[in-house]
Amino acid sequence: MFRAGILSNPLRPDGLMSVSADWSWQRVALAGMRDALMLPAWIVGFGLIGIGSLARDVGYPVDVAVLSTILVWAGPSQVLFFASIAAGAAWSAIVIAIAFASLRFLPMTMAILPLLRRPGQSIWQQLLLAHYVAVTAWSEGLRRLPGIAPHQRVAYFLGFANTCMVVSSIGTFAGYYLLGALPIPFAAGLLCLTPMFFLVSLIAGLRHRGDVAALILGLAFAPVCEHFIGGGFDLIVAGLAAGSLAFLIGRKRKPA
Image 1 (cartoon, rainbow, N blue to C red):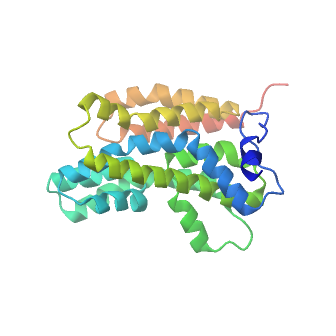
Image 2: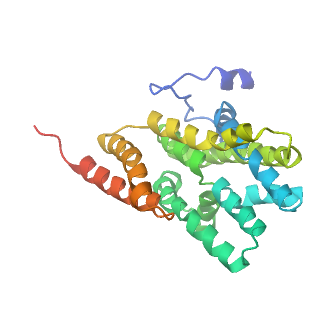
Image 3: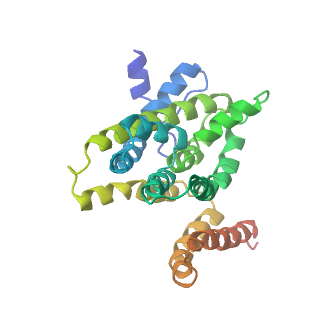
């Protein structure tokens, strides 16, 4: 009966599965797990197969590879970490590089935490929630959480994000032992799954004129900035320019 109730959940008007306001936190968490397993968790998990292979290539044990997925929870930063070790970079330089690479999560965290913050929530609870903020959890959270009762959002988010993390850890573990077994084009394609899913998720979550403008301007500015700026600063400049213009467009009132 319980499983049937979860699987036969009605759809909301936006096409997402609904979560009833009278559900217990356990059932809400299971709903988050269910939604993650429907596709997002597998996209992230397949995308992190390469992390395990990279860790083995530089001589690190499988437990370190899996632990990096759990603690870092960011594919590009993990790639930077193991690639820097392979290049013989100093630990101080690696720490600084990863810190700068992870700055992109700051605006993501600032955008999603207001949806998860509850009265009486401690700073440690908020820091724990912030740790789970990654590309997939953020984009899907912004899309799904507004339709969930405020008191159920933390349970849903943790169920969703932890499922993504578990599947990604399994993917990292599998990738460690698949070193050399995967064709290079296939392995490279796996790394593209997450950004492709992120783009599709963003498109599905567009709600306002400013959202549409941010996406279109960002896609238009990115290659231009890469050509004229480069050096790793192109995406930062493109994001700031596109985001600022989209913010102004979003605030502009429609003519009467």
